[in-house]
Length: 275
Image (tube, rainbow, N blue to C red; front, side, top):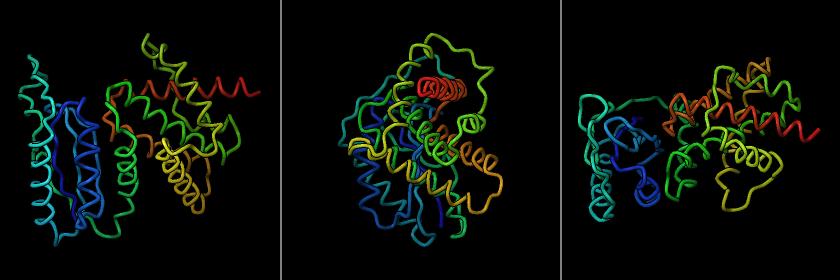
């Protein structure tokens, strides 16, 4: 099989349209597609990196289908174009908004036995497309990432049933200095933590979160059958899943540190109140 990669350059304010009205219907309608990945990216301008998985024999056909479909989408969508702001970061001008760029990332071939390593990214991408249907901004991305991260923590807590062991799994935030933005959002994150931990099943509006929790349970239970050291095992799975979320959502180091800070502080408060 082979991963093809295209970059859809459009301003962040348009990303929810691109996810819902371009990527989702293309994925549903194309039987050559075996899976897809979406990653938010800022290199050479705001863009969504779209990976398309297909059999090697279908590489040319899928590439042609994607090119026709996505170009037609941008021609008809009439999306607002963000002006290029000078000076730009780096030495290259950003790509024009609402265009498709090829060749920024080389195709990657994989064997059928390697597909399991891509399952997390494929499942997460479906959740991103389903969940982010309203306008996306930096706060939306951080809040969405927190939902995913604290839901993973919830699954681990049910298996460990020990607050100290749970907190030992999460990386330390000792070096993070909370700024006014982090402090102002902490109360919201505490509310989300209480809601996620206390809710057994979410309604249809948050059904994507049920899917993510189910995926986390499967990963933890499957690994638990083969790994003797539970804490080491959970740390590995936690780090893999959280770093995958950060990568797909294009979250920088400050945002990653802030999210870990939110998780630890929210859990400490939740457990304190629960006692």
